[in-house]
Image 1: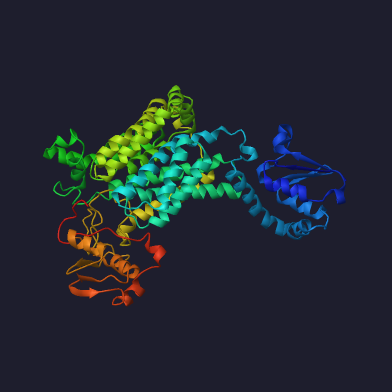
Image 2: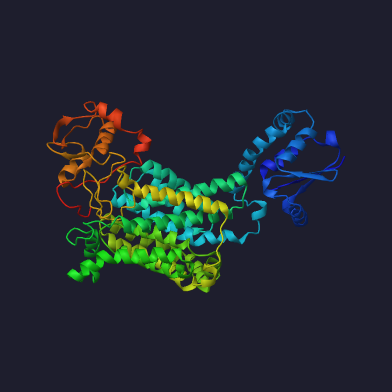
Length: 578
């Protein structure tokens, strides 16, 4: 009986497994062939239909089997001597058990190779891995600015460990933007931070959450199926594209309300008034209406152009330019949102366009300059200056400090990325369509939740002046207040003395708080006391114990409430920009 085992010599599990089997005692001579060292055998087995990333292949007297069947065959042939061989026969000697257990082991093999920085066999010569580079470069910059955003604008100080982890992981990815492992670790710490920092009302945080969901769905699909590492990014692309398109949909739809169209209170005017000079010097009623309606026009054109392959390049160029311009407003630290959206615009580049950019002389020049110590120091200085400006509330100056690092990459994309033919010939796997459809639908439903009365924060609000709380709707299409859920109906207006800092800020600014949010605060801080009026009834110096019945009847578990929250409410006036 002649036996040959074809295995992956780069996989420590495979190598150890083969070495522990005592086949020679039962079948005689056994030939071991490391597939990494024999290209001819790899090609031969592939031509016979074996997927070498799905497991080893066994040749027994000319009959070849692979994957779970190979493991089952080896278990039947191995000697019962030794603890390992007895366990191996117990698990894999039964075809059904072997078929169930083997995919788990195969996923473990894939994950081990990935974490060790070793590619799977089919991925050894796959050039697609470099196509992640542009996205990785800009997403790393976004992650750095995101940390500044939370620490300086949202005053999450002192900086917690998750922010430090994101900052370090972003710097690593910035130095190796095409590295799947560097992107993996940044996505991992970003996911942990998203959970730890919730709730957060920022638009870019929810958009990033959709990106993270799309990435992990693609990652685990590749892990379970044993796919080439390049497929992680390839199957993630449509999820990122869909999320960006949904952002534009609600960036337009939420603003179809009376207050956004009113120059007296419109957020568009607020953003324009706080632009850097000379833009902010242009003050005229015509400019006010231009600022209001330009957002409908620009975002609408960008969205439609990104959908149409022939116009995709121009939609991407306009979208990138539009978001860089928004970052010049001092209204908010827009730079993090800007860089996140730019990273998603990059996903609309075809593989041919990305290859062209990577092969360009400009990219070569950029890589060369990026390695120089003086330029690395200059980048760190820009980060420090931008962070300091943000800490002082000078968000437009922070953008001026940080945008140069982004503009170089965007200029390269616009100059080298024009390739109309490739834009019309893009293909994606079934998995990419499934993942993309799921994430897009999830984000779309999330954006629609205010109209169902479920929540108002993190719903792509986009400074839209939208108001649906307290039985009042200012939306021109959804003129009736939400009725599917009643969470937006009850709004508390604070009175008297409130020592709790959150309640105190609401009272000082005159904002009301959705009752659900108030109950959540009292449940999490039982020592807090509050006085407020709601629906004509007055509550004086009450705490969580006094409202325990409402807390038990109304609130969801704490983990659910992290994603289930509301914006401040203005009951006695129009919904001025917050």
